[in-house]
Length: 168
Image 1 (cartoon, rainbow, N blue to C red):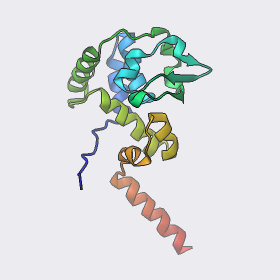
Image 2 (cartoon, one colour; image 1 turned 120 degrees about the vertical axis):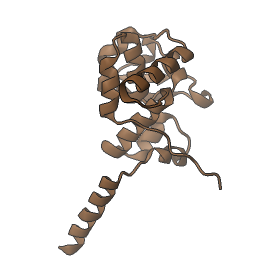
Image 3 (spheres, rainbow, N blue to C red; image 1 turned 90 degrees about the vertical axis):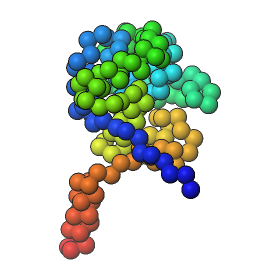
């Protein structure tokens, strides 16, 4: 059995600290696309204004040459004018790594934002995993399940709620 390492994540609050400290609007847009839309670096780099229509982002030939259509999250609406991003993969990697070290004192990379956004939607906003699977462009639910992170407080709360229900 191959053991998978859990992906590194940051909280939305930590992301917002990075966002607030990012002054270059194209970079801020790229970071928001990776976090709130959970886009891959390649998808961010190739995204154009014409890929957005009726509050949906059309990802053309994403990973595995698959197309998908995902809802545009409200946190992005005011940043679409900065598309296309015109930043290289290496430039994006260096920028997020630098911001992570400087602001959070953490070693993060672009995929950390994708993992973090997906985890936020699953765990904090409680969006169904099947929707997240389609949002991320995964074929198998098992791939998406690595984004499920149960923190000890959520676990405790769930069992306390279950205990209250059975005591009635």
